Length: 421
Image (cartoon, rainbow, N blue to C red; front, side):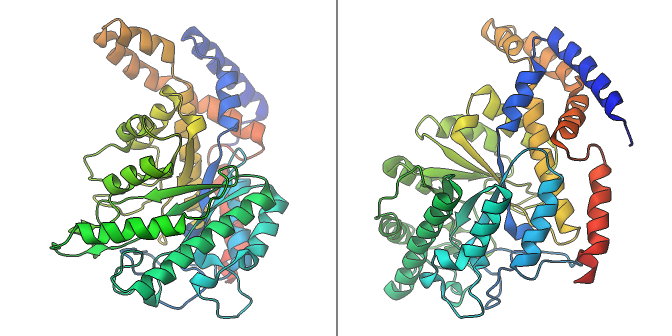
């Protein structure tokens, strides 16, 4: 638990020698790892509450647990995020929802939001040196109470949400200009039916027109990368979701947008990793929302499980890292919220490290020669290679705690800050 720097260095050098025997350059792998940003989702810090306090969460979203210390305003949320960033190796990003606008106490509806309502977020992100991604918020609002937004039959309600989508793109653009980093602007809507609908095509026709209206203004992709996110089902939309994966994939291909693949948005027997290479045959870039579904889209904290490893392996094996934007998407109010960020993000990075340390040439040679026995044997044998020693060294070099030391920092922060809220 208190391994010295000298011991970490020794273990790392031993690990390097072992990996070298497998044809793996560990230093090169770490250089790649340093360049991969993960976009931390702000909504873990306050249970998807936002700062409007105007409506129930809704939209098929639910947060369980009542662990003390939830962030109640922007300053507290930013403080918590800074604490998390200090415990995660590498330089990462923030994923921000529109409901986190700071309007100075004035009532500003979502169709009227502008960059000025996110100026404090921009100044803070600039100060700590991170990029910001953005999301319009199509939930927790009186005009979303019927379960329909961009597909609503009422043209006035549709127009409200279209204007919100347009405003969000301008906010994302402002973030990109301020921070010098493109902002991924991701559209997800909860629209759908609890029971079997008669008309499946009508809502999708309305959705297409709404999206066309939102994206009608051309914004350079060096500033804003527009993304659309599908889903299989949700609470209240078990039988039919307007914005399905198939709908958005077709739309993205036709309109040169990104598709967001969310790990919890498919049937439990589907592997999101299997979709990556298929989708990238037709799209230049994709967005990932990495989550952990337990029996359904339950958004549990990301753990280092087979699903996460397969996602990371696919990104590395297919050489897709430079075409993929990685964000996290979960919310757990039953545990320390800062720890939830740290655990999930560190696991995402660990999975990428393990994938980067694979002896890919040996694996490819076995597969291309048709020696599937050797391929399986190799895949099993490399599971015990000393990735942990490389991870600890990486953390040490990045100036963040390795092993369980990070939890001590979280506990101190909990005692000094969170417990006083």
